[in-house]
Image (cartoon, rainbow, N blue to C red; front, side, top):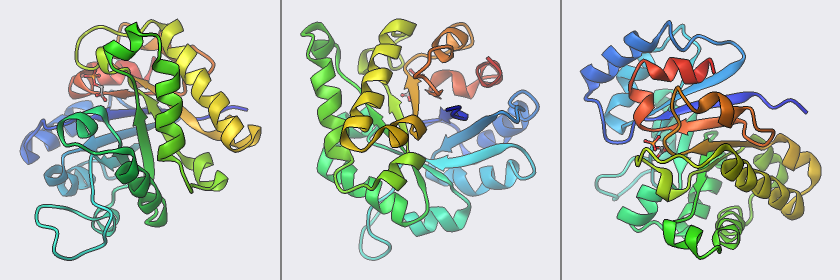
Amino acid sequence: MARRRIIAGNWKMNKTPSEAVALCNELKDLVKNDAVDVVYCVPAIDIVPVVEAVKGTNVHVGAENFYIVDNGAFTGEISAPMLKDAGVEYIIIGHSERRDIFGENDILINQKVKKAFASGLTPILCCGESLALRKADTYKEWIERQITWDLDGVTADQVKKLVIAYEPIWAIGTGETATADQAEEVCGLIRSLIAKLYDQATADEVRIQYGGSMNAGNAAELLSKPNIDGGLIGGASLKPDFGKIVNA
Ligand code: PGA
């Protein structure tokens, strides 16, 4: 079945609100493509101005983080209903930077996936192995374990709407991209796992992205692979190059 391509920018902790609006304006004509879902996942403080700046364009807005409770005494956090009310549609969950720098584990990540769905947000669930696990040749087991834990109690109907991003940690921000064959191997493995955990129809619908130094030069080859339905892009999402990836 034909899955719709999804190209998402992960702006990380970059761009002040006024810089964010300027970037939206700069990219506006470059990211036009009606055959692709285009998403900007932006810092919390940029959400309101970015939603305004992309009005009337083909760009959807995502957030980079949230907490699993709707409101209350959680200093510094933002909730899913706040994101939803602001116009956010997608939410990155389980990014390796959240896992490694902020100590998020699979129990919390699983709660976040369920809460996102319950709140009407589409999760972009990230997984990926370290260089040590890649070298030890245990990366397949690692990815399967992450996805199995993170989707505990998530229904097949929800998984059909889910986006999974395979992001080998050794390729993030390093300029070192997984080869298209390496990326395809793991994205195919993830799809087979979804078929095993759910059923083939669910596996055929779930969209799987590759992330890790995807750029204008390597996007077309990565995106030509049968199990790679899109990209989650960090560094190159902040430049006009992002338009080339959208249209690769
Ligand atoms: P990168 O980041 O494209 O800069 O490697 C990808 C990501 O972390 O989502």
